[in-house]
Length: 197
Image 1 (cartoon, rainbow, N blue to C red):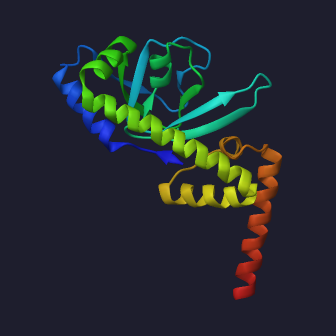
Image 2: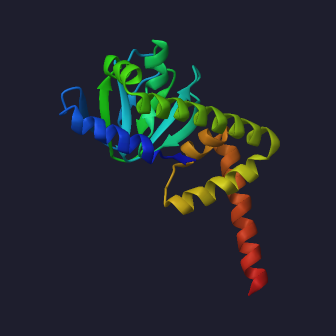
């Protein structure tokens, strides 16, 4: 669920030091801040230094679908920079976030002149495609209940607290369905505890 990439992070920190901060800046976003807006033109690519962002698509009927949660070293805005298109989705800070920000022209320059950077970005794009395919297959093959259990485990392991709205959006279900699943799991846990006492 929460993606991180220490290779990209260490690489951009080297570039940031070498560039003497003239082409790359370190920006701060407060929890809940909109970092990129779906449908808008962006002139920047960002690499998360620390914190957590959610990447989600908003439909016309105000429903949201969360693609992923991105952490340290994850890149946002790179597809839009490569394709010269408007933002495909929204990026919002789930926690306070620090991110390296650089112009799309600086991004293209790094892609052209820094082979290591180009290879890491290509690897990141390939990894995202693999994970998106796996997640789509998983959601087709398994029930929402199984997805919820996996999501709860990931939250516990990562010490994350997601809102019910975010959990439902990530699972691709509505909040009512999520509440039913949570209630059923809570009842099961109570029965299990009372049975073992």
